[in-house]
Amino acid sequence: MTYEEIVDGLRSSYREIENEGRLVSAGLKKEKQTAEIVERYAWLYSDEALKAASTVERETPEGTDREAARRVRSAIMQGIIGRRTAALDDRLATHYGTSKVSLPGGEEVAFFTAQAMLVREPDPRRREQVGEAAAKVMAEVDDLALEAMSTTLDVIKSFGHKSYSSFWSDLKGVDYNKLQAELVRVADACCESYKRWISPRMKAAGSRYGECSRWHLSYFRDLPEYDAIYSREAFEPAMRRTFAGELNVFTLPTVHIDLENRPAKDPRASVWVPEAGVEVHLLTRPLGGHLDYSAFMHESGHALHFGLTDPAIGWPLANLGRSMAYAEVWSYLMDGIGSEPLWLRETFDLEETKADSIAADLVAVDLMMFMRYSAKLAYELELFAGDPLDRDRGRELYARILSEGTGFAYGPEPWQFDRDPGFYSADYLRAWLAQAAFHQRLGEMFGARWWTKAEAGHWLREQWRKGSIPEAEETVAAVGGKPWSGDALIDVIRQRL
Ligand SMILES: [Zn+2]
Image (cartoon, rainbow, N blue to C red; front, side, top):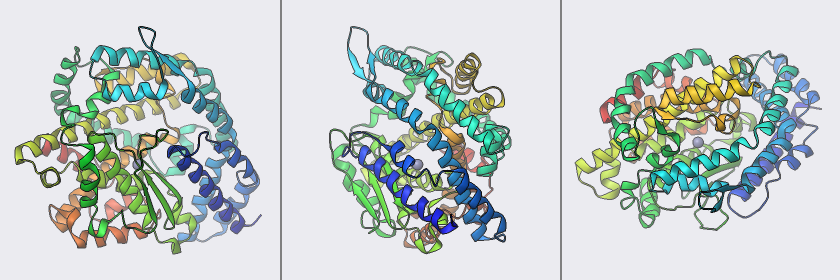
C-alpha cells in the first residue's frame, strides 16, 4: 500500500470516528459503534501499514515532510492499540452507560447521573454516599479494565518497546521524570495557598485537610455560591460579547455550534474535529453555573484553533499533534480569560472587589485541579515503573499518591477508571504551564485586555493557521517564555491568591 493511501485512510477514518462521537454526544444517536468503524479500517491499523509508514519516515530527509510521516506512523500505532482494545473499551463504556448506583434508602440512579449529583448536591453526607456507591460500580469492572491494559502492554511490546512509559515518552517526546520534578516544585511553591483556600471548604463539608472525602472535589469546583452571577440567561450573550471581533467563533464558516437542549445530549461541552480547517463542531448544553462558561471558553479555544487551521499544510500536520499538549494550550488560554478580574467586571458589571474575589476563587479551583492532575501523573508514572497488572499494588499506589498530593482522602476503587491512556494527564499539565507563560506574554505584548484587541486576534490567527505543526514548549520558547517551566504559573497563583 502507498503512503497516499494510508493518509487518505487516516483522513476518512478520523472523519467517521469524530462524526460518530459527535452524534452520540449531541444525543442524536444512541449507541456508539466505534469498534465497527475501526474494524472496517483493519487494513490501515495493521502491521503492514505501520511498516510502510515507517519506511517512508526513514527515507524522507529531516524537515516538515519527515515530521508529517512521523505523525502518520504514530497515528497508526495508536490505531493498532485502539483496534485491539476497541471491543473491551466498548464493553467498559456500556458498563458505565447502563449501570445503576444504589443509594441508601433503596434509590437507584444511573452512573452518569450520580457523577452529575456529585457536582450539585448541597448535602455533604449525601455526596459521600453517592461517591462511595459509584466507586462500587467502578470496582465491578476491575477485571475487564485489567484485560484492556494487558492487551495494550502486549501491543506496545510488539512494537519493540520495553515499557509503557518508554513508548509514550518516545512517541510524544517527553522526559516524564524531568516534567514530574518541575510539577513537584510548582506544587510545593503553591501548597500553602492551596491549603489556606481549601481548608475552610473541607471544614464546611464536616472534615479537614488530609481526611476530607475525595467525593467533595467536584462540588468545591462548581463554586455554587456564584450561581446567581453565572446564570443560564446571561450565558449566550456573554459568550457572544467575549468572542466578538477577531476571535469570533460564532461566525467562523468552519465551526458549527450546537447549543440545543436535547434530553439525551451529554451536558459536558465538547469539540469534534472531522477535519481541521474544514469541519469542526462545538457542542454545549448550558445548565447554569460557572462551569458552563469555563467549559464553553475552553472548547472555543479548540474550535478556533482547529477551525482556523490552514488545510494547505496537509492533512497529517493539520490534524495530528505530536501530543495533545499543544491543542490544550489554546483551550486553557481562552478559558483563562474568564478568570481575569477585568473580564469578570465587564461581563457581569461587578464591583472591583467582587470581581477580584471571584477571580481568586477561580484560580484556586484551577490550583486544586492542578494538584489533582499532578498527583494523577505521579501515580501513573509509579504504576508503570513496576507491574501495572498487579492489582493490590495499583490500588495501594492510587489511594496513597492521590491522597498525599491533594489533601483529600482517596479510596482505591477508581485506580483504573480515573486514568486516561497515554499519560494524557501530562499533556494537560504541560498545557497548564505553557498557558500561564502565554497569558503573561500576551498581556505584555498587547495590554491587559488583550482578548479585545484586533492585533492580538491577528497574532493568534497566525498561530492557529499552523494547525498541529508546533508543540507547546516550542511555542512558549518562540514568544520568549521559559519552556517546561512552572514560573509563570507560580506567578499567577501568587498574584491572585
Ligand atoms: Zn481540551
